[in-house]
Image (cartoon, rainbow over all chains, first blue to last red; front, side, top):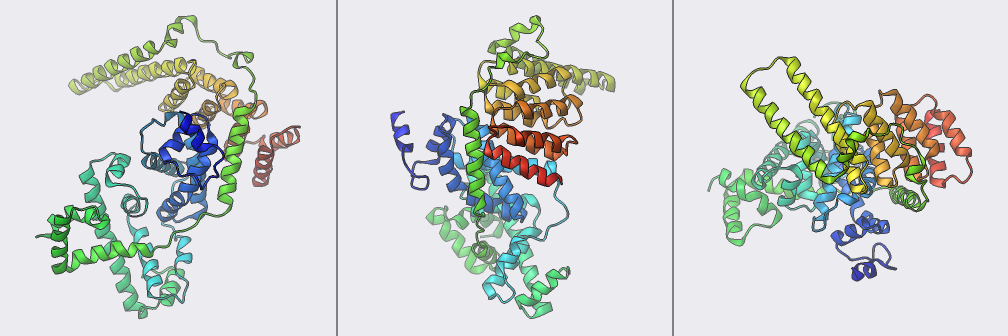
Length: 214
Length: 268
């Protein structure tokens, strides 16, 4: 017990190297200041999770705030020994579902983040990033989510299985199917560009802006 | 080896968590299968998607939320007993206070559930029978909520509040109890949870007026901010006036004042 307090005392956020679980226990026991350290560790991954999934900066930022508010609210329900990362992602998923319940997603969005991905005079890699981004957005919500969870969020397959409430093998199968679909969508978009614009990213953008599907 | 067989191994291969022997099997397959190779290539290409950075305001917003939360916890709250319970529980439900009673209710509900399930699967009952059964089950659960809201432990009260969210429609008595919790529970967490639970029942007039009143009496900045947000979401007709009044009150927490001004700007 004593050690816990020493770990938190007088240490700048950012410099604290205590494991997430220990910090969360301190938050649970009333030291809400420690949530700042967890915020620094998780705000960017969570923001990216939402931004890649939903493509909207503003909503993503709001949801990140909502997640940490919920961590405070439900901190009493955090059980010692629970891995923190899957725990906070569970909260993050619930926050997103509640958000959709309040304001259901409109028609297919044209993600804002895409503009930052590839400026018109981009090199091949940037064009590929733009196409990947669009291919990802073409996937159904659940496939996009599982790919993002598996690829970017540093969650083990076992943890994703716990998060989604399914078997480990089901997770692996679903990751693979989602990747197959992503590959097809990506190559299709790439083909479209070759046929219509000789592969220049500028053409791609003008088509996208005028609302045509390539 | 066929693609289907590789499919089982591929997810672990992609993350580098596959054991050496099997990795070699996959690599061998990849050398002869363009399609699977392309899947691996697309997976690697995902690295090209740049990470986006949250804006600088994000941390400030978080700090403000945390400060408001801490201020709310430190602020001396009015003793819960100072506010009379609007609808005192009938004495005959006193035994519900014990945790054992909670267990008993859970068991009773399980039995009712099993009974209802069996009954429904064996004979096709008239729809009004089923409806009656559902109503009965719902009121049993709501009684449980009432009892949990009276518990000593904040965790149990919190459970009571979240339990209430399973019901689509709440009895006026449960709504009153939730409003009472929102006004005077000693724990900020329980008050916040009560607000969230109540927010699902905007159609009930007592909920709206109760939440509006709570804005004036609330001591915790975090709850005040949450109340403002909720009333703003509902576009409550009297909100602008209330906010102006609140803004003028002396000793108001700066975060709350800021939120009130922000809400006022949204209303215009």
